[in-house]
Length: 365
Ligand code: G3I
Image (cartoon, rainbow, N blue to C red; front, top):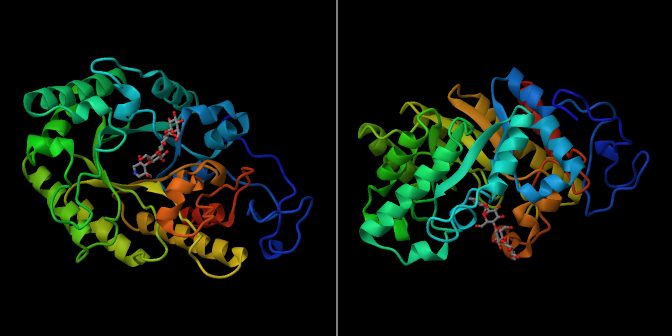
């Protein structure tokens, strides 16, 4: 199905009937779908009308599922490779590049008129083990070669690169200890310069989590100081990615998020929400109530982005609850007791209340 076409009419459940019964099929607890009767309009059209991108992270193997590919092409105009462009996947041995899985995602995106957010060139996780053994000039050269090769290979086909990911310490005190820090605090500057030289058209981003809260929050302030220093130094940085992995146990208000976006935009950067998901495991009440709260949180995050012109897009970290990273027990516990049902489509690819919350926000409702 091409973007712009509509999903077929299905026997959707009425939201109000979620807990008890629904039209045409029963809804097990594991599959919290809820959509009003009627046609589901492509999210990407709603986003485009609001002059924003709406994206999803995807692993290339998920494209073997034709139904999932159809949902992605119908509803999203931006795609982030979930793991395929990380160092471990792309340069497992020195100078040996494996870019086929990334190519597959880029080709899918081109076929369906989607932008690609490249993720990510320099990150301390999912790093090829051989890199951690390097120091000094050998590490510097390895980092620059890696960046040159990837950004050069996909030159002109990647709209935005997360050049450096999660470099800040969790407590906001400077940069985290990582193999790259041995190059000195300005390793980010070198990474961004190398990326810009390899693909001068791509928008280059610094991307991190828990920097959403704004002034007074140590990590948010550390991110602000970091990118301001880089801008002031003339480093080619164009944007900041706020991941938006919501932890409902402690989460800033929509107004706090909006004000935070504003201060980064005032630096001359664009802002994108790059990895949004809203796990409900720790919310209170019956599932129908948790999904209602999830809808509200997702709606408000999108509305916060729409409140600032320089906020140009929102990406969900996955498509369906079935293949979210939070469906894995290893990761789920980061957000407390699951199941988390963190995304906009349920395990059977039916749109959830969260989907309609996002659509409503784009429509200004
Ligand atoms: O590919 C191997 C496979 O060969 C092996 O059999 C299997 C067994 O566990 O593991 C597979 O690797 C997994 C990989 O995802 C690909 O599926 C890793 O175990 C697993 O840890 C890895 O998780 C990824 C995680 O980053 C790693 O930190 C998640 O899928 C991915 O969603 C997540 O994404 C990150 C962003 O890149 C940065 N921001 C946070 C976000 C969530 O953690």
